[in-house]
Length: 347
Image (cartoon, rainbow, N blue to C red):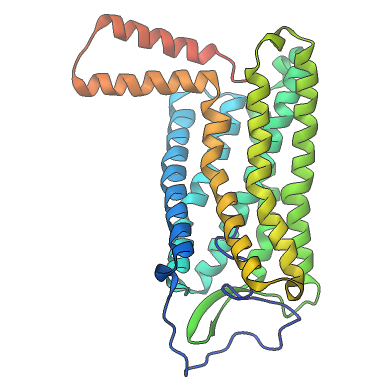
């Protein structure tokens, strides 16, 4: 995902066949940022700052626990890869926040292309991994015996690598079309679609289909099958699986739909009010970015084994820091850690 205003034709300048000229320098203009004087822009900066702090720290914690403190399993492979994707995304947020505050790109052409590429790499890799997690849970519920015998860390790792390769391929348009230019006295990082008449529409539609519609349909089908299956099993007495699944699907839908809707509307920007499109794109990118810190909560912290490992690890660290070695507590933590290795993360 490109943060912020990847498609905004007035602030981040998407140029297509509708424009006669590409950005050029007009020395008569002197650019002065007005973002910090606007309430909406300041609020967006605060939101992105919160997303950065929560997402960076939350995903770093997930990487630390799932990568170094837990036994390597299929589930931890999914969680670790998802956390790495979101962590990298959050690490690059300060570049976009600086661009938003200054209303100018100061990091050069290479970083213009790199930041955009990383943002979309995160979008596709995260969504593909969420689809894989959904399909994995569906298979485990429908064919538990087969899953127990064939779900291996090696196969999971191969699937993760395939997801990343596909995400890289779909993120390449950012490297091709992203450019740096000067408009009205300021340097901008923009999408230059002037060389191909249909490139803008092709990129937007392909991202919508591959990054939202197809994954969302697959996730809905998987969780519908799981719910129908659970209704006929012993888990019917518990409402937690249904609540968790509803939260997962709702978070995916709410975070990504506004972003893609306004991206598609921007294709025919001449038919819509410019201020509405700009505001919608900013809000849409904010919601989509929020998914990067919601993922650790929804997909990891709800897993029983991860929660137990997190509690036991943090408690033991606190105990060591305080220098209070209590045998009873130590035995309890040891027992909790042992149980965490055996508990299932499936809902």
